[in-house]
Length: 534
Image (cartoon, rainbow, N blue to C red; front, side):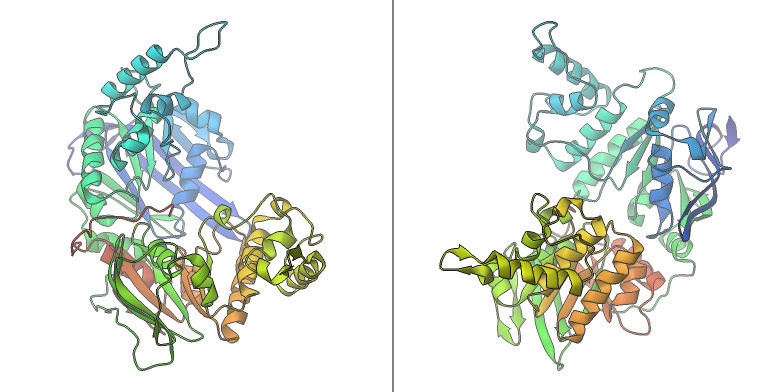
């Protein structure tokens, strides 16, 4: 199957490595993809763009066989077609689709050779069942040489640069390809999120080499400046449909933002400033730590302040620093007009702060029951003369289950058996029981259904009505526009803009985030990026 390339960096006819025709995906109550069609040419780097909720993730999951599309679509890989409602992980693997996700699933405590073997298997001695280490390292060396990854296979992965981690993950995904002929399709999902600029350069240099050697690459990213640097072709999704497919030379930053958002870039700047002369609970001045540089803002009592930015912008670092999980390098924080320094989480909690982290595994105790999870932030309340008053703990748990609409058989139900949405409601309830002055929420509705989302924000709004102030970070800009009274845009560790009513719209947030992400990084150390798993 061939197609004529639109005028661009490559010139002529190229074989189509991946063709998607009329792909749709319907979830209950929403249509995630609507008759999506696109072609990815062999030996090119094809970028897939779109705002949150545009359908990128659904498309990738259908290609991986995690989801199945609606009947009627087809996916063709190297001229072999499959119905989009019949994709499976086994089909994806057999078709030559190789995925490297944002979470690389590599292990710092293992050697490079051992990380490569996880995707292929360890060579063992027959009968003795012991690993043949020389064979393992020799095989790894051949894979690394093939993909021009210049590291020692015997070194621990944790000793290497971040870009090397990504390169090892790519080599692991591609290692079983034939050295000749078809090389399959490499699909990368946000591979640069945790990489500093110098590491991005190393990765992109390698990807260009792979493409010149014939490797087909589909790159999913939000970072428009990187798209302009590396893409041979770009496809933009909006609201589940393809808005455009363009070759390099046919787009610039403003054009991409217009296609993603649906309107021309608004030239009016909206500078982020501190709130002054008002009833402030929190004042942050010139905060610098990790990726954050000179962050200054205020938070009113009873206000929900949204923070929007791409992964790596410093969003999580801001929340963890305020909660005492990491010390600031520079700056001041005032609570009720008094300067505070939280050396640890206990002091932050004593001051009335609460924090719900992004990963539920960091806050939920799955091996315990609902009662124990609800009381985890209040244990001293139930201890008296070295005795835990379990009856009082159970009474409070039953009251919380009813008050916060947690669907549980009883307070003694194992926490692991609750649905994801009810687990998250219980985690939020744990903190709201303390009636915090400041509630910090990092992706509070990630991985929960729409009903649970609504209930979680109902609980948050009830707390706000009682005087709690909230800072919420979420990648869902539609959600942020609904819940926030004010929104700050964070890019490269700096506040670049502020949105006030009636201008808090998902499209405007997307526009400002994408525009700011392409701005020149300024200030010492500003090239550092936040690790998205902090």
